[in-house]
Image 1: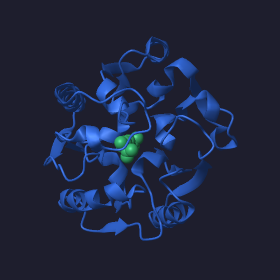
Image 2: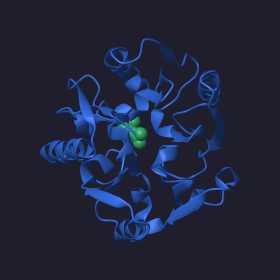
Image 3: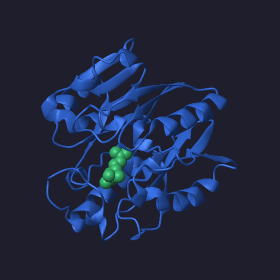
Length: 256
Ligand code: CIR
């Protein structure tokens, strides 16, 4: 169960952030509205929000998930793989220091984006991506091992269309994963029950289990129906403006 989430509203220059999508520029007013609805959904799911100040120096700073890996046994600050994002760490460090007396860090030349880290019980899948390098993944694995967690690497560099591991993978608990087709045959996920998201609904794979509910992107009826059949209570959220900037539901918060 989570009790808190760190969030940061998008800044007015949000459209200047990084993106590989060709979906047009995000509309700022719309992004703010979608972010507020997201925050309301977290609150509705029982979380108290820790709101960081908007930071125009970093147009991607609304995607707080990439800057830390939080576990039940300790928190780790990452070293984001995009140089334009490394400065985001200081603000998140300050916020997390209120709750964690000791914060570990990933060091140069290691890089990790939190979006590449998927916790499944006592195990962590760490994606090796354009943002997370082998050295960073190794450092994280060692830090997680010191907290008594196991981990394994999932190389996603050849998987087209996903920025991070969690762009194509989500943990629903009870050994059940949501996964995109292209990752569904990986040996790493054998032994789990897989809910495979169709190519057309790929963006929806990035859903977030928050206590009793699952936050899902609005507009993906197949996955929503499937989750309903499995008796999950979903909250559908408009995510169009964040999708334009390569972001999904999980990246907008750090939950703990
Ligand atoms: C970036 O490229 O870094 C941002 N525009 C999007 C980050 C999305 N984060 C995530 O999926 N965890």
